[in-house]
Every structure is written in structure tokens, then in C-alpha cells.
Length: 141
Image 1 (cartoon, one colour):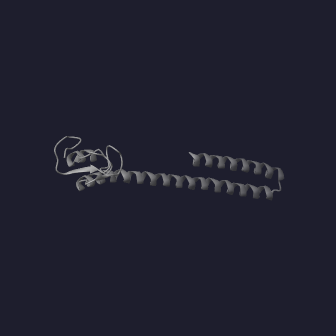
Image 2: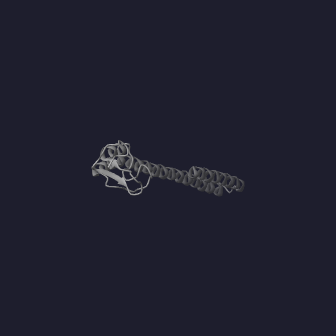
Image 3: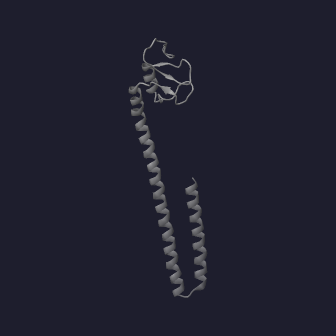
């Protein structure tokens, strides 16, 4: 057998079940793996069809890919926390608006001032609409 990368005669090799003469010596396979490329994926046909892969090269690949996967998981976790914090803040703002509305409504009812109540209702509905619009924009983006 001859390695298709370094053209050395080899006794121990990995190969692809799809590709003809896609034999790779363990040293070239190691170099391929150290480029953070999956040794199970054929470098010619890009399928998961490589066999007889050296276990050390699989371990090298897994040790290199594990930190990358951990970073990806941490990023997703941070995004979820940011969205949760944003939702909590939106809820606080909404509850504050409702509390203010109830306070001002109670005051307008106590002093029996109907025009103040109508103005208050218009202001509340405007603020509520703007809040919903802001919340929609944040969720979509």
C-alpha cells in the first residue's frame, strides 16, 4: 500500500470504503486530525466512511474538539441567561406601569375627576402599546 498524501509505502493505514486508493498512513492521518478535522470523514468524498482509524488519532481529535463544544455550550447558556434577564426586566417594567395605572386610577376615582381618568387611560394605553412594540422588537432581533 502507498499513502495517497506522502506516497510512502505503508503497512498500517486507514482507508475509505467509498474511495478507491484513499489509503492514509497514520502519520498523515494524525496531521489531518491536528487540523481539527474529523478522522472519520473522508478527505476526498466528505462522507463518514473511513475505517481502520488509529485510536490515538481519534483521541487527539476528541481532545481538540471537546473545548470547542464546551465553548459553544457556554455561549448558548449565556444567551439563554441574557434572554431570561431581558424577560425579567420587561416584566418589571410592565408591572411598574400597571401599578402606576392603578395608583393614578384610584386617585382620579377618589377626587371624582372623570377627565383625568380618560387622559390617564389614553396615556396608559399608549405606554402599554409602546411597551408591547418594544418587546416585540427585542424578541424578533
